[in-house]
Image (cartoon, rainbow, N blue to C red; front, side, top):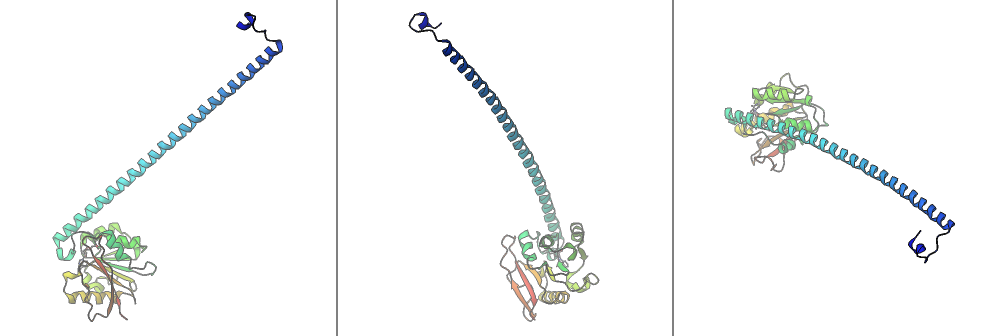
Length: 268
Ligand SMILES: C[S@@+](CC[C@H](N)C(=O)[O-])C[C@H]1O[C@@H](n2cnc3c(N)ncnc32)[C@H](O)[C@@H]1O
């Protein structure tokens, strides 16, 4: 009995009031039970979500680590190849500086600029002269010229061995580009659609450079280009009386040293 009732200041509750109170208590108990069950469900849901997020994060970390590992080992491989090519070039330059013409292979920007003047859609063989370790060859292939269309003329036996490994479907001809038609006898089917040359032409006298260009044009289809890079400010093929028209690119400054690309075509 409540204190008020005991003190005689309050009346005891009637039966119906007590019944009302006990059913309210039951409702409250039910509600508490439902709320508790909801809470348990919510906690379980949150736990599931946390587990899913953790799994996703772990998965992402695993993937990123895998991708990084691949990238690092690819970069390491490329760096090793690049260093190897630099070393080969320096060795070749020490053996024959005038023939090698450079202490380092051309950079990708210059190689791409050279390749940009070859139209991959025009069918037929593409002759590359002085491919060395193959940076221009690589740019030609990247441009969409099937490796099997490439005829690589290289003087150095060591570079030829390397080129055969790197471009197994290309035709590698070890020989002298200053006697081009003789060197290519039996290797060329039909006219070529471009001659792409990295020869250090300035190591030869003007008459020999002119003879090289004349010979190259006997192997080229009508309208096809002779593409030549140079570090010099003047045309590596003497222009006067050559019957050639020429276009020269802007300086490829990202190459060391900067270089330009000359594109020659028959004037008529
Ligand atoms: C300046 S390096 C260019 C190499 C490569 N294309 C590059 O851009 O890095 C000149 C290349 O021409 C080759 N070469 C020089 N004289 C040659 C000749 N008479 N016949 C064929 N190749 C020659 C050298 O061996 C060397 O690989």
